[in-house]
Image 1: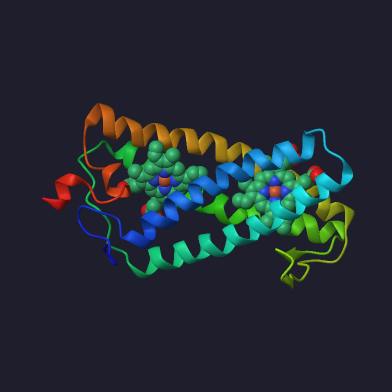
Image 2: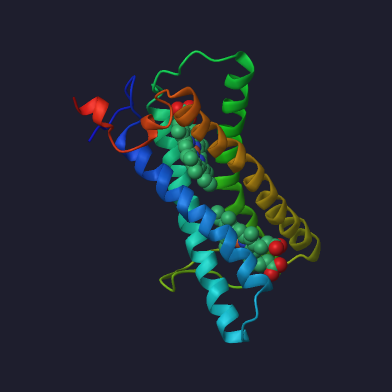
Length: 187
Ligand code: HEM
Ligand code: HEM
């Protein structure tokens, strides 16, 4: 268990949050589509929406925590030599993934607020509205929430594709640096 990023590995908190958030965001994207377009009774639909909103707010807090940890520990595993455009593409997609991780919950929260629906976190406490009820803001936030899904799918495919290419084609340390400590590192 390592609390700091090293030249070989991301820190344990970054790894844990990376995979937890990756799973949660993918599950939430599927859930968003299923709950909106699936065939459910009104009660079932309300339950699904309520769960979607609570998990989404949890993602917002964890994503902000991850960003904070990342900003506090600026070290990072060494990257293998690669063309400049690949560096730029990686940096761009990492920023885009942080924007999606934080932007999806915020636009969902904005949509909910502008719709005038009350919001609770797993039935434990009330979450305040971000804005007053407004049809224009509701339409804008709904559009942005959907646009976020498109950005997520495109950037995630690029990101996961690049990680797999590093691992299986280039056979370097990039994917291993985000996995539980590799055997190479334990030796
Ligand atoms: C990472 C977090 C989130 C992801 C990936 C996500 C994803 C999605 C997706 C894919 C849809 C279907 C969009 C469409 O077809 O228009 C959706 C709908 C929705 N989401 Fe989220 N969402 C997230 C967080 C939230 C949060 C935090 C809230 C509210 C507090 C929220 C509220 C809603 C609502 C109310 C809808 C239904 C919109 C409608 O009926 O038109 N979402 N979400
Ligand atoms: C929705 C899902 C995902 C999100 C939101 C996400 C997000 C991120 C972010 C923001 C970073 C940048 C770390 C930083 O500099 O702070 C990162 C790094 C990384 N991710 Fe993901 N990721 C996702 C899925 C995946 C998947 C499926 C894989 C593998 C197939 C993967 C492999 C990696 C690797 C290897 C790194 C380290 C890259 C490096 O050292 O430059 N990620 N991820």
